Structures are given as structure tokens and as C-alpha cells.
Length: 114
Length: 114
Image (cartoon, rainbow over the protein chains, first blue to last red):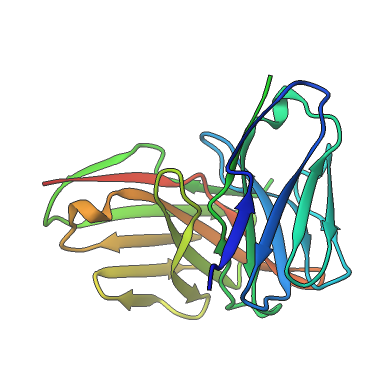
């Protein structure tokens, strides 16, 4: 099993450009998440999807959109990138909605917006 | 406002000693608390989970305590090794809407000297 995969690994954008970060998991998990991680701050939840066909906002959703394409894939889109969106983005998945489920993280996408 | 605070300073210890990391939280009533390990350039990896009604949990050289009165968790690495060098994140699990979500601290970086 590959677990959680993310593409691309690195990306540099200019302000105003758009892009989509891709995430896929092969563990048949229901829940998927997008986080951003900035220096000195914890992982912050951007959007999540508790099951196929549903998405909800997390703590910092402004400037982002998501699509749960199917059970395996959950993408994050930046429509008009801003320097404040320079960060490391992690996708994660979790088996069920249970409280003891742990999250499995991808390797991250390092995004720089100039 | 809700806060999760981990040791603000990085921890440097000698091989063989015990590393103790602190996670304090305010304005949360977590059902569960999890600890993750993150290596540079990688996503977090789950280590241990402890429930609110448990005082202590162990896994090999790792020990976690959870004091809901003090609103604090302690994470111990005994007989530390250079391979234990990493950033350790605590995360509180709470039920929100249709899923249990994690809120993360900023992490404590541990360096074990040989």
C-alpha cells in the first residue's frame, strides 16, 4: 500500500496564479483532510471530507476550495494564490468517524507564492 | 480562545537520558489526546493515543500521561537514542459535526546527542 500520496512535492507560483494540489489514499478510508503547516504554528485544518460526496470548512478555509472526487481522492484548489498561502500542505485520511481513529498523513506539498 | 501549547524551546538531551515533553491546553474538553512524530520534510506519524479516563499509556520506550484537571499531557521518551531526534506534536481529538477532528500544537523539536 502506498498510503497517502500527494502531488506535486514542490511548487512555486506567482501571485494570482491558480493550481490544484492532488491527494489520494489507498486505505479505503472515509474521511480525508487538508492542513497547512507554518513555522511556529500547529497544523491548521483547511477543509475536510467526512465521506465521499461531502466537504466542510475547517479552521482556515478562505482562499481555498476542495473536491472529493471519489472515495480515494481529495483535491485542494487555490484559485488566486497569495503570498500568505506560502506554506507546507498536508493531506491526511482516517478510517471512520470514530474517536480513536488516527490520521495518516501524506508527505506534503511545499508551496511558495511569490 | 482555545489554545494548545507545547514546550516552546527545543529539547537537547544526551543519549540514554529521558526526554519529557509538555502539552498544555485551555478551553478544550478533549475526549482523546494523540501524539505524533514528524521528521524533517515528512508528514506526521501517529505514536500514541490516550483517552480522557486513562492516566497513563505506554508503548515500548514511550510513555504518555493525561491529567484532565491540570489540562496537561506529558510525553516521555526513556533511554533516548539519536534516532528519536524529531519534532513531536500533540493533538486533541474532539467531536465536531459529523466527525472527530484533531487540533494540533506547534510541536517540540527533540535532538538526542550521541
